[in-house]
Image 1: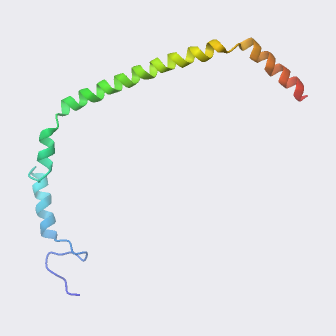
Image 2 (image 1 turned 180 degrees about the horizontal axis):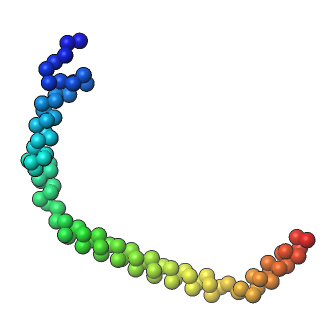
Image 3 (image 1 turned 90 degrees about the vertical axis):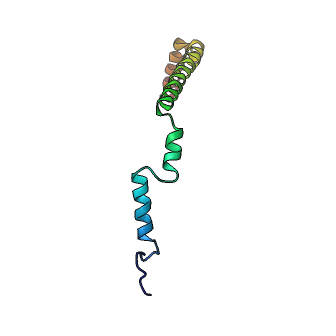
Length: 91
């Protein structure tokens, strides 16, 4: 098979790839500038921070809700007695 100029063995046009890379480096690619101009980095940071705070608050509220619920239903003295009885039965 004869090698074509500016083509790799896989058939990639090396010149075309070089041009695309140059455009991307200069910010002239078809998609790069379009999306970059639509993204407000500061706004995204604020949204992420707000989301993290809400998640943290939600987690602490849930922890309090379940932590006291189960703690109030557990009679520690009764559990100790049951454990002792169980150990005696094993002997």
